[in-house]
Image 1 (tube, one colour):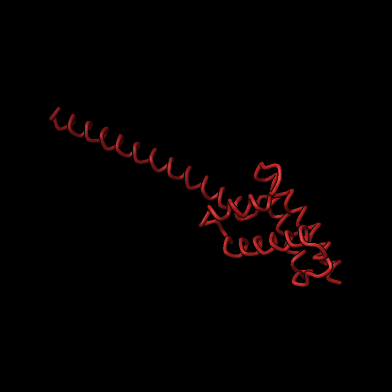
Image 2: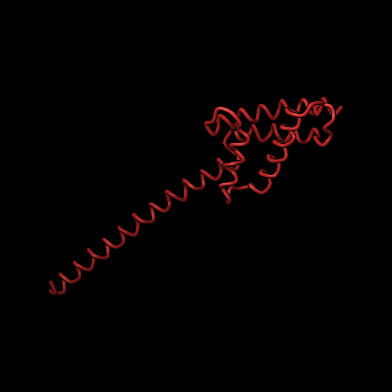
Length: 141
């Protein structure tokens, strides 16, 4: 039974690897690139849940791919692991994954920061104009 699960896991991992590579614009090692990006983004949503799983799954994939007989002997993977890989691949492809969510928040923050600067400049200009008008009305200018 474990060899069937391991083969399904391997196929799901390969699909996730392709999705991650497309998402991050790399030719190969998409999951590794995703892991590296997630390591850099310390405040990405769900990072603490996703990162350990991806590292665990990359290790399992490497064992299956590079160790003789591992496809039949590795018994730590379950159907839930395969389901998680498939769900995560779907979330990456629909840009609902931690990196995509982080990037959306960063863009919103950047835009809001620019809006605040413009509002402050407008407020200062309005105060200056009002001050000029009041001083002109009082005959100071």
